[in-house]
Amino acid sequence: MSFDNKISEFPRSTSKAITLDDVIQSMTAWRANKSTRGEQIPDDIWESIFALVDKYPDMPVCSVLGVTKMQFQRKMDELRSSEVPPRQSARIPAMDFCEAREAPPSYKPERIPATN
Image 1 (tube, rainbow, N blue to C red):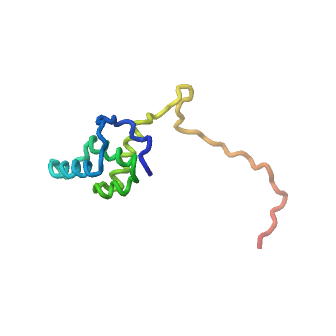
Image 2: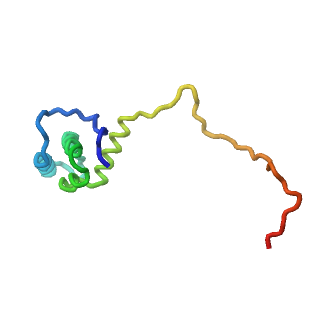
Image 3: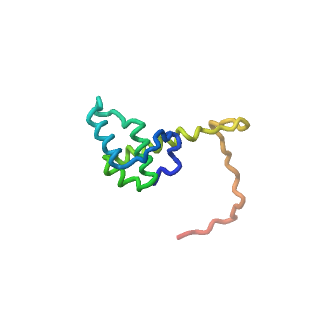
């Protein structure tokens, strides 16, 4: 699945074309200088990754960069959730519980045939 039209949240701040080598260098520098093992990939690097996946298939790009499918999916989900705010109608109140009543059967046989 590609990030087409899903990354509009990130502004394209540079007019220079982003290359795979540029992103590899950014990832290498970030990995060498990050303070903790669990530190997340910075948004400017994600912006570069998204620029690449606009042009090339996402999984090969992520593979070369060492980004897992899970990291990629989480970032995509994060962008989706920030783009589409939850909608609630003001006219229809939320309903927590609805009781269903059992209706009598519409047909009642006079005699039930044996099944054996």
